[in-house]
Length: 198
Ligand SMILES: CC(C)(COP(=O)(O)OP(=O)(O)OC[C@H]1O[C@@H](n2cnc3c(N)ncnc32)[C@H](O)[C@@H]1OP(=O)(O)O)[C@@H](O)C(=O)NCCC(=O)NCCS
Image: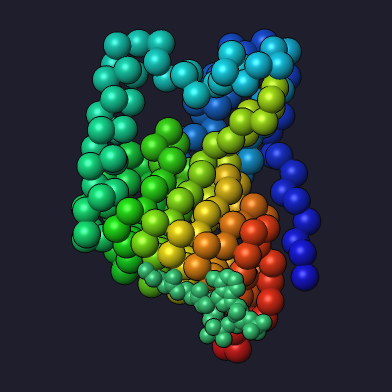
C-alpha cells in the first residue's frame, strides 16, 4: 500500500553557485524534472539555503517581495479566484474549476512548482510545501494535484509529491509520498486505507 520514496531527478553537491543556477532553471515552468536536491558542504541549514538565488539583483528582490506580500494577502481571502489568479501570476498552473479554500498556504518561494487539476478541492488550512531543508540537504519539488482530488482541511503535502486523480486526503493527513489515483489517505504519516470506485 506504500508508494516508494521519490528519488531526485537532479542532484548537486558542493559549490552552491552552479546549484543555484540549476535551481533557477528548475523552477521555470516547462522543466520536466520533478525533484531537485542539493548537498552543501556546510552542515548548518541556515547557511546552505539556496532559496536566496533570486536575491542577487534589485529586480529579484523586488519580485520576491511582491510575491510574498501579495500571496500572504490572498491566502486569507474567502474566495478561490483571487488565490488562483495570484498563484498563476507567479507561475502556478491552477485549473479554473479547482477550488481553493480560505487559509490555504502554498510555499511562496516557488509557486511555479504547483499544478492543480480540474475540479480538485483544497479544504480550509491546507499547506503545500514546495521546498524543504534537512541539515546539509536542500530540496525543491513539483507538487501536482490531480483532477477531482479532495484535499481535506488542514492536510499537509510535502515537496515533490503527486496526488492522483480523485484521491481523497482526510482532514489533517500528512503526505510525503505519491498518492495513487482514487486512494483514500488518512493520518500522519498518511496511509492508504481504501480506494474510491470509479
Ligand atoms: C477521509 C474521509 C474522506 C473519509 O470519509 P468516509 O469515507 O465517510 O469515512 P468514515 O468517516 O466512515 O471513516 C472511515 C475510517 O477512517 C477514519 N477517519 C476518517 N477521517 C479521519 C481523519 N481525518 N483522520 C484519521 N482517521 C480518520 C474513521 O475514524 C474511520 O475509521 P474506522 O473504520 O476505524 O472506524 C473523510 O473523513 C475526510 O476527511 N474528508 C475530507 C473533508 C474535508 O476536509 N473537506 C474540506 C472541508 S473545507
